[in-house]
Image 1 (cartoon, one colour):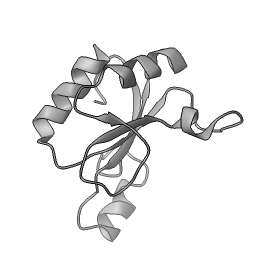
Image 2: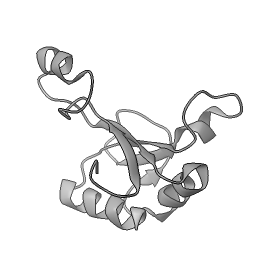
Image 3: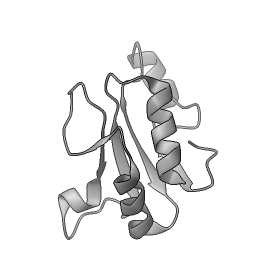
Length: 108
């Protein structure tokens, strides 16, 4: 996702580019199934991407078995400090290739 033209940034401790990567490597056996990314184009484009996914459910939750995506600023409401173009993803039990394909088609 980091190389995708419509992705501004990816926040995931498993990426070498993440500022906390070395600390995460020392503290974790694996890096987990939570990540966030910022979509180029701001609020409207982030909402558009979240509305185009087919396998992910648009919802707020942690620890379930299904893959979720949420526009965090909308969940927090007015006055949030979360970037308006940020989408948070919780990866479930679906096959990774299917989830990647779904995100790529949603990004267009």
